[in-house]
Amino acid sequence: MHKDVVCAGFVALDVIYDALNADVPKKVAAGGSACNVAMITQFLGLSVSMVGEVGADRAGDIVRDELARCGVDTNGLEANESFDTPVVVERLLEPAGGEPRHRFELRCPHCGSYFSRFRPSPIPKLEDLTCGLKAKTFVFDRATPAIVKLAERLKDEGAFILFEPSSSASGKPFRRAAGLCDALKYSADRLTSVSALASPECVIIETKGSAGLRLSYTFRSRRIYKDFPAKYAGPPVDVTGAGDWLTAGMLVALKGNAKPNSQALSSAVRFGQSLAAMSTLFLGARGMMDALTRRQVLRACDRVLDGQVPSIKPRTASPNSANPFASCYAG
Image (cartoon, rainbow, N blue to C red; front, side, top):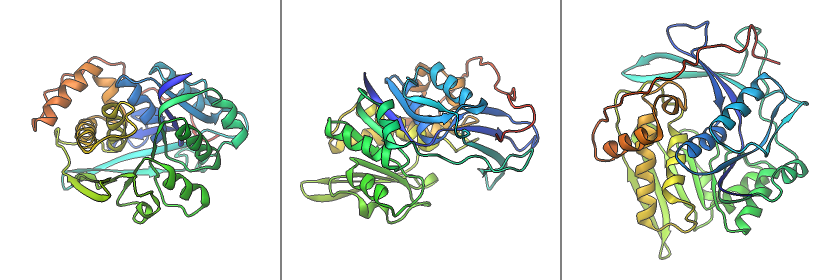
């Protein structure tokens, strides 16, 4: 099976509360960076597979069903009865200085139990789940031995490899991941020295929140650095998924190009930034997918690229306020 993009890494269930009601969730949806990138990229028109494991539980069922409804191939995402699907509670807080704020919680608000954490798949299991799977691009956010081995296999077959770590690590799999990837994307407020582990040819995207990002790449044996101010699409509501829209937008713009030139990289960054800015107008990491069609998103993106604030008319969407958990999210 050949896909435009294969994603692996953190998959979770997001439970979102807004500042007006701390007791009833405003939204329950599939989440985790790798999962979000998979669904957004599929929404934008590429063919995507999500690989790995979730728990054989209610949270895992919701995640797998939502991925499938988005069109993402889930044949390589297996339900495992030996652990629970991770859950992340996001609480939107009162804005400070006009900027939206949020807090993540890793304990059940009902019983106080800690949620299950990310569980890496063993190498034989992931090899079995991805047997015969090929991709133009491979995206991952967790450097486990099995995922890194899959990245090495896909890179040998010509895939473009994007590694997007959420936190620093010093182990051998992390160093291998940073050294083999074609593009390394990370947040400046979370990681600092990770770029030193990348190869000289690696494209590096260092995001800086509302300050934009810095792109660096090698051209004719010289390292080039470019700063891109953040795009503006309107007053932000929720910024949690902006980085995932940036990643997905860049993937779509590059279209599997394993050796993008400077112009292609700059265009991809600007397109991704425009999508990221627009995504902050909606609740949840992928709220824009619920409110707008792909055509509406792309038209509004063109306006943001031109420095204009888009006029958006959301489609009628079924509310996502039903809580599938009667009393407890843990277990």
